Image (cartoon, rainbow, N blue to C red; front, side):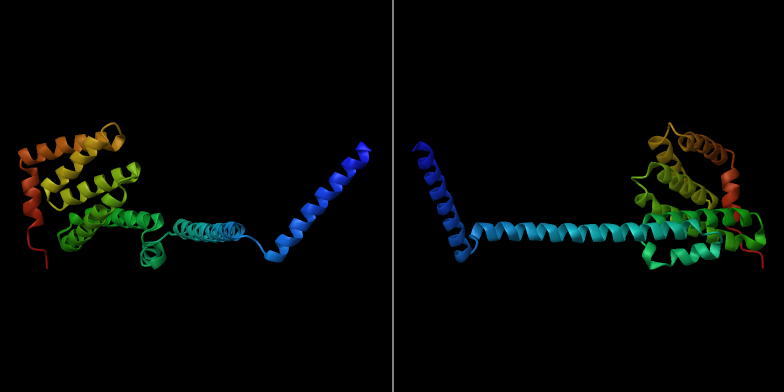
Length: 214
Protein backbone atom coordinates (compact mmCIF):
# COMPACT_ATOMS: atom_id res chain seq x y z
CA UNK A 1 0.00 0.00 0.00
CA UNK A 2 2.73 2.39 1.00
CA UNK A 3 4.65 1.64 -2.20
CA UNK A 4 1.56 2.30 -4.31
CA UNK A 5 0.95 5.54 -2.40
CA UNK A 6 4.53 6.74 -2.98
CA UNK A 7 4.22 5.85 -6.66
CA UNK A 8 1.01 7.83 -6.92
CA UNK A 9 2.59 10.85 -5.23
CA UNK A 10 5.60 10.76 -7.59
CA UNK A 11 3.27 10.49 -10.58
CA UNK A 12 1.23 13.46 -9.39
CA UNK A 13 4.39 15.53 -8.74
CA UNK A 14 5.79 14.80 -12.19
CA UNK A 15 2.47 15.60 -13.80
CA UNK A 16 2.32 18.88 -11.86
CA UNK A 17 5.83 19.92 -12.92
CA UNK A 18 5.17 18.96 -16.52
CA UNK A 19 2.05 21.06 -16.43
CA UNK A 20 3.98 24.03 -15.09
CA UNK A 21 6.61 23.65 -17.83
CA UNK A 22 3.95 23.53 -20.54
CA UNK A 23 2.23 26.57 -19.06
CA UNK A 24 5.56 28.46 -18.93
CA UNK A 25 6.23 27.70 -22.58
CA UNK A 26 2.78 29.01 -23.48
CA UNK A 27 3.25 32.21 -21.47
CA UNK A 28 6.84 32.80 -22.73
CA UNK A 29 9.99 33.58 -20.71
CA UNK A 30 9.85 35.98 -17.77
CA UNK A 31 11.33 39.47 -17.86
CA UNK A 32 14.20 38.36 -15.68
CA UNK A 33 15.06 35.54 -18.06
CA UNK A 34 14.92 37.84 -21.08
CA UNK A 35 17.15 40.40 -19.36
CA UNK A 36 19.67 37.75 -18.31
CA UNK A 37 19.81 36.34 -21.84
CA UNK A 38 20.26 39.84 -23.27
CA UNK A 39 23.15 40.57 -20.90
CA UNK A 40 24.84 37.29 -21.78
CA UNK A 41 24.38 38.04 -25.49
CA UNK A 42 25.95 41.49 -25.17
CA UNK A 43 28.90 40.09 -23.20
CA UNK A 44 29.50 37.42 -25.83
CA UNK A 45 29.43 40.02 -28.62
CA UNK A 46 31.82 42.33 -26.73
CA UNK A 47 34.21 39.45 -26.11
CA UNK A 48 34.21 38.48 -29.79
CA UNK A 49 34.80 42.11 -30.85
CA UNK A 50 37.66 42.42 -28.34
CA UNK A 51 39.26 39.22 -29.60
CA UNK A 52 39.04 40.45 -33.19
CA UNK A 53 40.51 43.87 -32.40
CA UNK A 54 43.29 42.36 -30.28
CA UNK A 55 44.23 39.92 -33.05
CA UNK A 56 44.13 42.71 -35.64
CA UNK A 57 46.31 45.02 -33.50
CA UNK A 58 48.82 42.24 -32.89
CA UNK A 59 49.01 41.51 -36.61
CA UNK A 60 49.56 45.20 -37.43
CA UNK A 61 52.23 45.49 -34.74
CA UNK A 62 54.07 42.45 -36.11
CA UNK A 63 53.98 43.97 -39.60
CA UNK A 64 55.50 47.22 -38.31
CA UNK A 65 58.30 45.36 -36.53
CA UNK A 66 59.02 43.44 -39.71
CA UNK A 67 59.28 46.70 -41.67
CA UNK A 68 61.51 48.21 -38.96
CA UNK A 69 63.87 45.24 -39.02
CA UNK A 70 64.23 45.48 -42.81
CA UNK A 71 65.44 49.13 -42.85
CA UNK A 72 69.02 49.38 -44.12
CA UNK A 73 69.44 52.79 -45.81
CA UNK A 74 68.67 56.43 -44.86
CA UNK A 75 66.16 56.53 -47.73
CA UNK A 76 64.27 53.56 -46.34
CA UNK A 77 64.33 55.10 -42.88
CA UNK A 78 62.89 58.35 -44.23
CA UNK A 79 60.13 56.51 -46.10
CA UNK A 80 59.31 54.59 -42.91
CA UNK A 81 59.08 57.86 -40.95
CA UNK A 82 56.63 59.24 -43.51
CA UNK A 83 54.35 56.20 -43.12
CA UNK A 84 51.22 57.32 -41.26
CA UNK A 85 50.76 53.84 -39.81
CA UNK A 86 53.84 54.22 -37.57
CA UNK A 87 52.91 57.60 -36.10
CA UNK A 88 52.58 57.29 -32.33
CA UNK A 89 53.84 53.70 -32.39
CA UNK A 90 57.04 52.44 -30.77
CA UNK A 91 58.49 51.60 -34.17
CA UNK A 92 57.98 55.20 -35.29
CA UNK A 93 59.66 56.54 -32.15
CA UNK A 94 62.63 54.25 -32.63
CA UNK A 95 62.86 55.40 -36.25
CA UNK A 96 62.99 59.04 -35.12
CA UNK A 97 65.67 58.13 -32.58
CA UNK A 98 67.71 56.51 -35.35
CA UNK A 99 67.17 59.56 -37.55
CA UNK A 100 68.39 61.81 -34.73
CA UNK A 101 71.52 59.69 -34.35
CA UNK A 102 72.17 59.84 -38.08
CA UNK A 103 71.79 63.62 -38.21
CA UNK A 104 74.00 64.07 -35.14
CA UNK A 105 76.70 61.93 -36.72
CA UNK A 106 76.51 63.77 -40.06
CA UNK A 107 76.56 67.14 -38.31
CA UNK A 108 79.62 66.30 -36.24
CA UNK A 109 81.38 64.79 -39.24
CA UNK A 110 80.94 67.93 -41.35
CA UNK A 111 81.33 70.53 -38.60
CA UNK A 112 85.11 70.81 -38.87
CA UNK A 113 85.02 71.72 -42.56
CA UNK A 114 84.24 75.43 -43.16
CA UNK A 115 82.76 74.53 -46.54
CA UNK A 116 80.17 72.19 -45.03
CA UNK A 117 79.61 73.96 -41.72
CA UNK A 118 76.27 75.45 -42.69
CA UNK A 119 74.95 72.02 -43.62
CA UNK A 120 76.45 70.58 -40.43
CA UNK A 121 74.65 73.11 -38.24
CA UNK A 122 71.37 72.34 -39.98
CA UNK A 123 71.84 68.64 -39.27
CA UNK A 124 72.70 69.33 -35.64
CA UNK A 125 69.64 71.52 -35.15
CA UNK A 126 67.39 68.83 -36.61
CA UNK A 127 69.06 66.22 -34.42
CA UNK A 128 68.56 68.35 -31.31
CA UNK A 129 64.89 68.88 -32.18
CA UNK A 130 64.29 65.16 -32.66
CA UNK A 131 66.02 64.24 -29.42
CA UNK A 132 64.07 66.84 -27.46
CA UNK A 133 60.75 65.61 -28.88
CA UNK A 134 61.62 62.07 -27.83
CA UNK A 135 62.50 63.02 -24.24
CA UNK A 136 58.86 63.13 -23.18
CA UNK A 137 57.85 60.15 -25.31
CA UNK A 138 60.58 57.99 -23.77
CA UNK A 139 60.02 59.22 -20.20
CA UNK A 140 58.74 55.76 -19.17
CA UNK A 141 61.46 53.90 -21.09
CA UNK A 142 64.67 54.41 -19.03
CA UNK A 143 67.16 53.01 -21.56
CA UNK A 144 65.75 55.04 -24.45
CA UNK A 145 65.29 58.12 -22.26
CA UNK A 146 68.98 58.05 -21.37
CA UNK A 147 69.95 57.89 -25.03
CA UNK A 148 67.69 60.81 -25.88
CA UNK A 149 69.16 62.91 -23.04
CA UNK A 150 72.74 62.16 -24.09
CA UNK A 151 71.98 62.87 -27.74
CA UNK A 152 70.23 66.15 -26.94
CA UNK A 153 73.18 67.23 -24.75
CA UNK A 154 75.74 66.43 -27.46
CA UNK A 155 73.73 68.17 -30.16
CA UNK A 156 73.29 71.33 -28.09
CA UNK A 157 76.95 71.37 -27.10
CA UNK A 158 77.97 71.03 -30.76
CA UNK A 159 75.72 73.99 -31.56
CA UNK A 160 77.59 76.07 -28.97
CA UNK A 161 74.78 76.13 -26.38
CA UNK A 162 76.60 75.22 -23.17
CA UNK A 163 73.61 76.03 -20.94
CA UNK A 164 71.25 73.63 -22.68
CA UNK A 165 73.94 70.96 -22.96
CA UNK A 166 74.62 71.24 -19.22
CA UNK A 167 70.87 71.01 -18.53
CA UNK A 168 70.60 67.64 -20.30
CA UNK A 169 73.85 66.27 -18.89
CA UNK A 170 72.67 67.16 -15.37
CA UNK A 171 69.31 65.47 -15.91
CA UNK A 172 71.08 62.35 -17.09
CA UNK A 173 73.49 62.37 -14.17
CA UNK A 174 70.78 63.05 -11.58
CA UNK A 175 68.22 60.53 -12.77
CA UNK A 176 70.52 57.78 -14.01
CA UNK A 177 73.71 58.34 -12.06
CA UNK A 178 74.27 54.64 -11.43
CA UNK A 179 74.25 53.76 -15.15
CA UNK A 180 77.02 53.90 -17.75
CA UNK A 181 75.48 56.92 -19.49
CA UNK A 182 74.80 58.60 -16.15
CA UNK A 183 78.45 58.32 -15.15
CA UNK A 184 79.51 59.47 -18.60
CA UNK A 185 77.27 62.53 -18.22
CA UNK A 186 79.10 63.43 -14.99
CA UNK A 187 82.41 63.30 -16.86
CA UNK A 188 80.97 65.38 -19.70
CA UNK A 189 79.90 68.04 -17.20
CA UNK A 190 83.43 68.26 -15.83
CA UNK A 191 84.84 68.53 -19.34
CA UNK A 192 82.27 71.18 -20.26
CA UNK A 193 83.08 73.25 -17.18
CA UNK A 194 86.80 73.02 -17.93
CA UNK A 195 86.22 74.05 -21.56
CA UNK A 196 84.32 77.13 -20.43
CA UNK A 197 86.96 78.08 -17.89
CA UNK A 198 89.93 77.78 -20.25
CA UNK A 199 88.16 79.51 -23.12
CA UNK A 200 87.83 76.51 -25.44
CA UNK A 201 84.06 76.74 -25.53
CA UNK A 202 84.17 80.46 -26.24
CA UNK A 203 86.51 79.75 -29.15
CA UNK A 204 84.07 77.12 -30.43
CA UNK A 205 81.17 79.59 -30.38
CA UNK A 206 83.23 82.18 -32.20
CA UNK A 207 84.21 79.64 -34.83
CA UNK A 208 80.60 78.58 -35.31
CA UNK A 209 79.49 82.20 -35.67
CA UNK A 210 81.94 82.89 -38.49
CA UNK A 211 80.31 83.48 -41.86
CA UNK A 212 80.25 80.33 -44.00
CA UNK A 213 82.96 79.92 -46.60
CA UNK A 214 81.65 80.76 -50.11
